Image (cartoon, rainbow, N blue to C red; front, top):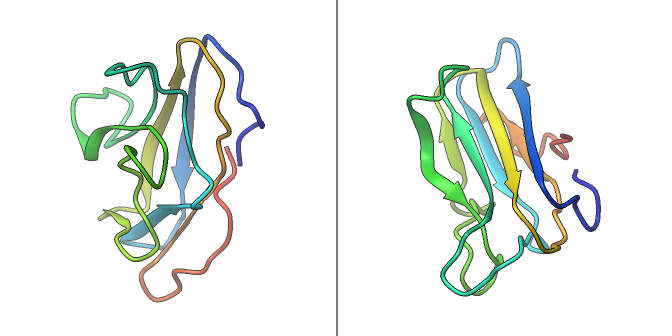
Length: 117
C-alpha cells in the first residue's frame, strides 16, 4: 500500500516476488487513483518482466481514476503475470493522488492480501 497522498517527483522501483507461485494475479482496490492532468498520465505504475525494462506485463502505464478514466486491473479482470517475479515501477511527476494497494497471489488463492510497496 502506498502513502496517502503519495509523494510528488517519485520514481520508485520494487521487486514483486512470490516464490513458488506461478502465475500471479494482480488487482487494485476500487479507491485507487493517480493524479490526472488532462491527457497526461504523468503518474503511473508499470509491471516489467525484469530489470532491463524492455518488456512489460499488461498495459505499459496503469493510471487515472479507478472508476472513470483509469485502466487499473480489477478483482474481476486482474493482471496475469505468468511468473513468480516482476519489477514494478511507480512514477509520479507532480500533483497528488491517493494510491491504494492492490493484491497479488496465485490464481488458486486470489485473496492473498494487500500488495505493499
